[in-house]
Length: 142
Length: 416
Ligand SMILES: Cc1ncc(COP(=O)(O)O)c(C=O)c1O
Image (cartoon, rainbow over all chains, first blue to last red; front, side):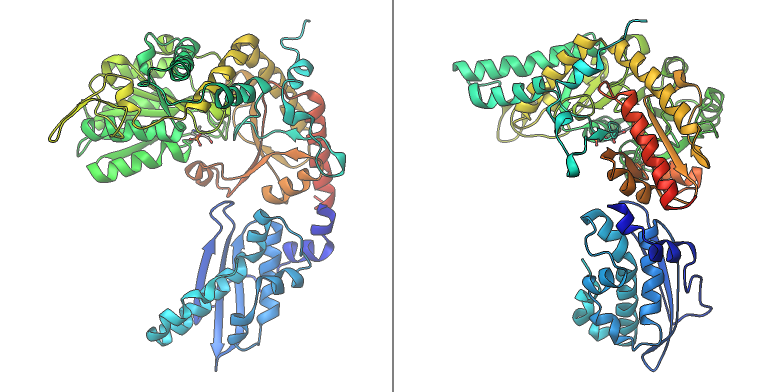
């Protein structure tokens, strides 16, 4: 039932998103959208010694996509960039407390992780173009 | 006053309307603009074809093939009558509205649209009546001109006159527009527009995906040159669309898909194409579903399209009046119910349409949320998405009341 989805935590992150906005001169800037519903997320990252020093997200969309993005920024802030590699779909769904979303809404919940992974891939491939093949599958989340 | 149609009796013909969802909830189906439910007459007609006379059509000489051909062709005639076309050869079967429009873009546009030409359409077109023209424009070097939608969801004909004049004599090759917007619900006064266009020798394509299922259609009266619509939005099965083209135009059109069935004679170096409409129906068509569509047309005729329209006007009035009572709601499109079809798009401040639809699902209510395949319009309205409730012959006031309760529940959850 939707009361289980729209709990206070989700609504709080939706109304008062953490780390929302842009970073001036980010090391990584990446965005993507969900073509079915038009949810949009962009993420800026500042990286030092492979550690995420600052992260901000921006976007518009439903409570699930925006709250999930807000929570994700808290999850990876000050963590090594490689943690992004290991984050799975289940990590996100557990973190936001929504483990039984329908297939359409799961895409909303995972959009920010997808964007973050795309950003990480871009960062590594920009640094070392020869890693493109190896990194190709790293941005898959579904 | 006597009821225009007996909704409760009609509902009994639709098996899906008596199914139970989770917790024994009834289905409140308000996504009819996307696709409609099917009466048992349609389901039975399809099943009868497969169990009694399944055969390929047009060439075989044995009994069941002749039966199949006859039923398939009967549907063509039913459609001719339904839209009041002059000739049944003017009716071409496709897969859906999208394919019908693509057929015109490729087969007609391919030889009639040239570099520097213009195609006029509106800002509220469905992607199906926009992207094919963009693709054609790009390959031919032709441009698209959009008629602007005002805040109320109306389009002015004066603007059309202006665009045609600016474009220059003979440059505008086609005006293509939706007779009813699938987002705003606006019904365009097409007759006036077509007269204006014909005075300047410009043909007009009507996207009838939303209009044909919901009101009487008369192609001789409107005098449109092309009309596209889908069976699945008017009680029929998926996988069948219609393209009506005036005979004079159709006879000069090149084929779209070539191969079997659309030929008269094939030799090593050349082919003589079949006559119209078969020339445009390459390969084995969707026989079962065309026959099913015939049953849908019979069903609608039984009710009468005027009654369908009157029922929807009444229900839309009720829906609009109830929605208006909800705090901080924004309703899009014309206010006058005579100017709109049986659908209403809206947004409640602070609740994203996807969240709204998710909460409504708890009540068994099925509505649509998103950009409704009309992103150009969404940009114009400066929104990313909206919620849309769309009605048909089997919807009741009680169902609208459930929708309203559900929306108020969503407001409580989101504390708006
Ligand atoms: C106005 C309009 N045009 C075209 C279409 C496309 O119809 P189909 O998906 O059957 O091709 C739709 C359906 O959503 C529509 O509402």
